[in-house]
Amino acid sequence: MISLLPPDVLIIGSGAAGLSLALRVANVARVVVLAKGPVHEGSTYYAQGGVSAVLDAGDSIDSHIQDTLIAGAGLCHADAVRCTVEHGREVIEWLSAQGVPFTRESNTEGVADYHLHREGGHSHRRIAHAADATGRAIQTTLEERAREHPNITLLDQYIAVDVITRRKLGLAGNHCLGAYVLDRRSGQVEALAARFVALATGGASRVYLYSSNPDGSTGDGIAMAWRAGCRVANMEFMQFHPTCLYHPQAKNFLISEAVRGEGGYLRLPDGTRFMRNFDVRMELAPRDIVARAIDHEMKRLGAECVYLDISHKPADFIRGHFPNIYAKCLEFGFDMTQQPIPVVPAAHYTCGGVMTDLRARTDVEGLYAIGEIAFTGLHGANRMASNSLLECLVFAAAAAEDILPQLDHTPPPPELPDWDESRVTDSDEEVVVSHNWAELRQFMWDYVGIVRTNKRLQRAQHRVELLLREITEYYGHFRISGNLVELRNLTQVAELIIRSALARKESRGLHYTLDYPQATESTPVQDTVLVPANFAGADAPPRWADHA
Image (cartoon, one colour):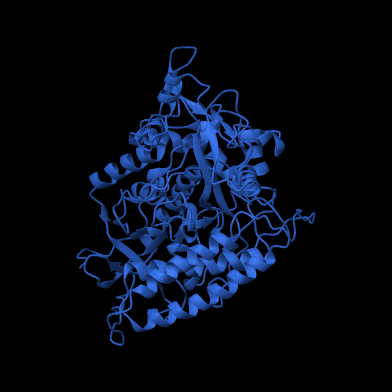
């Protein structure tokens, strides 16, 4: 049982977004951070590349903005892009102050400056990194700072089931009051009240059969926010990372975009380079273009993979810049200093999500969404490399700035009703959960992947509607488990992805359909906004400035 005073701020998710928000409010607020597994086990920990920011004298804010807008294929929101990019240096310096060990090199004056990578879509070197394990360095450092802080409580092995709002309790208004959370060790569901709740649960890439993400990327926060009455937007834009290591035992291992940024070539099985046939930027084209090119060549040749080759660079350079990737590849028998690495695309990043404003507020009062879960307007139709951790940090800071002035005049939440298990029994058919999970991920990969058609999407829609009905019935009759909670959420998010993809009658960015292979020329380009039946913010103000 959770035995503590109700927190001022409940943060669901323990990656870069959640922990940085916790640290920014903890000096004046009691904070509880929930992790549904070990505290470190999330997408942040596995991020290799780094954080994009304008840190070099030859770079500029306007250049970073322009690169982001180009990658976003006409769907970025100008205010969100500028807001994010302008705070880049500030959040890098904040991370450094927390103790994140960014890789540095001496500049012409002999001063240790940030060493900067260049990645796809960027016109300058602007990726601050900690060798090739930046996410691990950020996650480990922020977790250490959080454990040291007396006002922060970290609870692992707790998965949120649903947020609780005044509307759900039959009260006036629709302020968020807390959440029901499942203790995965005891199997008990508890009500945890809070003045403010922040969803920092990450994306939903595990909806696909092949993904670079850890197993916990099951769209929990997106599904919970949708059920609470929040709008979601642009869910059709699921980013596939072009280069995951292809090996039967190499589960989810990403080969950083920085390998291409430092001169790596993509090759066919016969050794031929092929990216020049698809884009003048070749290996440094944005991820959607590179992933589609690899997918095209694999299907054309019937090949199981393509190859990423940086062996023409000096061995010391490769080991020095990519020590963790080098070591991991050696484990699987590949010496990247001597030979190409086999790679395939895999689902990587959710570019759409829960609609927020520039202070990370959702349509439900007191409920915030930060990080990959959120649709801020930054990414448009395709996320540019290393803008993701930047977004986590910038919008966590924005949420903190919005929450702190409200603490003194926001009343504590009322006592919440206990979770009702009076009409359910223990399941004797857990196989239903594992079977539905496998079916969902398979048809999403087959029908809603890198290249789509109306017919494929309609097949997926039919299957997901059947699954939703089956899971809803199962959920209503049996005691819940962590696996069932994740399956329920992932199936709901899959339905949102399919519905969004069917609504977009064009190809743009990460959404490519053979039925509409060209982008429309309408101005402005429209976001795909889905509104739940119980929309919480009928009187909410407009969220956005015009598209850039």
